[in-house]
Length: 223
Length: 223
Image (cartoon, rainbow over all chains, first blue to last red; front, side, top):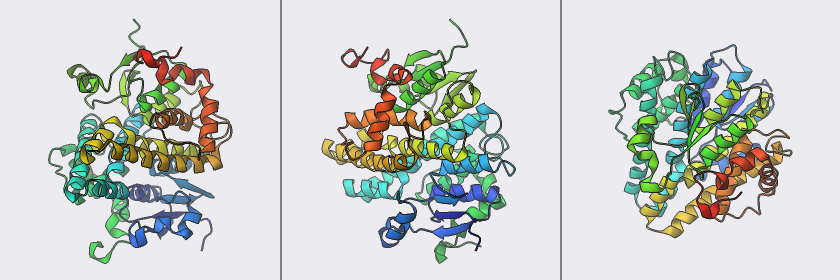
């Protein structure tokens, strides 16, 4: 075992874990995959063992260069700063960087929090209605995709921002997957669909896909 | 009128607007303050006039260098990259940058979305209970501050990350203000309180405060 090999604590279907997996693939970083089930036993992230590693009891958590890093977007920025020679995840131009980060944030702070497992459980419990829960998810995801679609009309080329794969693309693919899981109608968002289809063909994106991880349940496994 | 003077579309009490105001002060950028009330007439951000400027109908929106930038953290990163000679808002060291961004994200994606005006209105409507709404806010803010406090135990000096004012501090002060508004008990978070008290004394933070803006209602005005 290489003691310096980075360790990614993550869950196959966590969209923020998935973003980091794509970044690690694009940066050609060999890493150890430690599955932390967000479902098993009420959530393995709350276990005594994992709490010792990460008191914030969340994934993704990346142990790299002697540090435990949290929060997907800061992790991706860190990888881009410390491994600049592989695929750059932020454009060189500052305005384009701002646009890529903007799209990433629309997804990260404007969509993901509202489909978070614990949040939607709480919504279901408070409203005592699975239907209300689904309406909640649909409302926020549709609102978010509308904003992403408007952004892509201005910024997209082959990918979210021009023809370079950026931090925005790393957020888009897992978010579209979640949308499909929740039966969100994506017909109104042609740019979202077009860019997502391009991205899904890229080997690093294929390798990082939720359905191709060691903790993916058998019935979802794709090979 | 200087046509090149940046314009900040914002609202005195919007915490993400406030973050950008602090950044503009620290960067010594003279800007035009355009108030967009999130309350008046159901929200001026939805007006025809503002929708033409920003189809995403949200604040803050910063018009600068010929571009309209959205999302507070990407705006702050942009200001830091394009105005490196004034106060640096991200540390030079990549690990410290990751920690500063992590704290900013705990607040931006882990707390702010759950106290957002439209979100809490929806929670109140769905549960038909003001009490449930307040419980909701209290739950997410307390959870978030617990994570921030744990982070500060490791990273803080005089400020959130060592003795340098960073993007994390720009997020902390408006978040503590919101917590107080919602009567969140901060006694369990001594580092949050200590750092916030230090920050509140800084002239640029005083100038950017919600109670000192042109759209602050008279009864809240501090001078």
